[in-house]
Length: 253
Image (cartoon, rainbow, N blue to C red):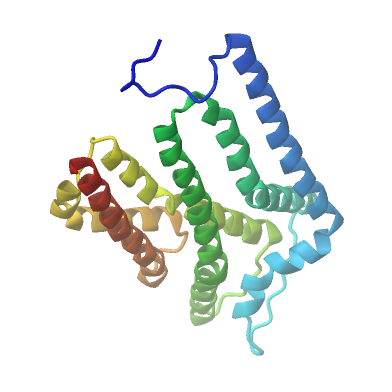
């Protein structure tokens, strides 16, 4: 029996096999949702391809004509699989987080639920913001720098669909995942493992770490692209410190 000060669970305890059954249905719902979006992408594959080609078309000029061409028999199939995976995952991500939240929520107390739900919502928003930032700004910048380097040396650009969609998938998913790091900082502050004073003390080290992450995620070594990626990460780092201070003040009160 719970005491008055001990947080009670929101629902009655479930058996081991009940949890397995809930987990099975959660996985089924996640897979079905992903497949629904993958099928929709397959139905409107040409239109979806036109959307994904926007970063390349946005950097092309009247003097630069660049057409993608396959170099192997199976490359077109690989591109279709990349479009299915990238589009299906990004479009289904909000629903996947919802299903996972529904699975975890019965085991949480009211206080824990008030923390988890905003974190899940923030995770979804940050991932989508990171994916949009990469698609509309970082990918075109990367392509533009690559085209300028090729033109400077007089190289003939023979880009393939596999290399283009591989770059697109890596940057969109990688930047979307990188935008989640402020949540990790806030969570560590909430758990008392990290403090904002420590973050402020090692702010310079954090800047170096952010540029290292930018160098790993961005495929080009030019400092312009890396700075474009590192700038919003540093802004998110400072926002995490602000949120962390509010958490520390609330805990002290």
